[in-house]
Picture 1: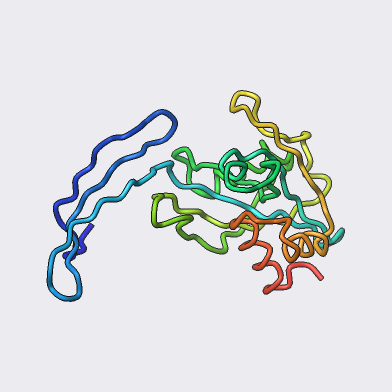
Picture 2: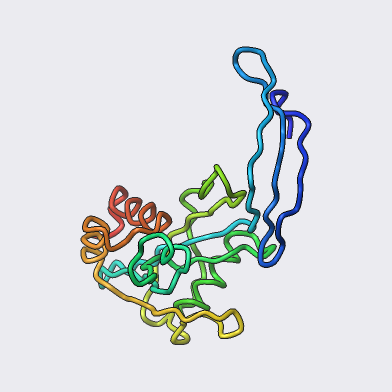
Length: 194
């Protein structure tokens, strides 16, 4: 941290029940040359990775569907969200994480993936950096039903859908997860599927 416009950073722990929530106060040097004091609540849940699985032969993608309480509380009628397979890094490198999460959530065992982006999920409040991947799958890579880990309380539905249907879901508002939007748009721009 070497930004000379920031000084006097102080952390106050508000919660560490699941992840870490801190109140952070700091001074910031404004363009007018004056120091201004700021306060933010910063949620640290670690970094994550997400992947769009695609099959060029079948022209399909693998997505997941699961209940997301924060979306339910914010006007998502049933709280169910269609999204790419994703997970927290848990001290792994991003590639190892997404290969592990892909198998846990979808049942497909990938040998290789391609990283296409990385970016901050919600930089105004979260420290999380998301690593975005794509990976080609075939039927013979299926090693289980997927669905997530019971020990993590996951109840994930695996969806194999035609790519064009996923694009239609994106355009009509049935896909509202930002990670999924980014990766589907990547697939469109780079013509991964016809």
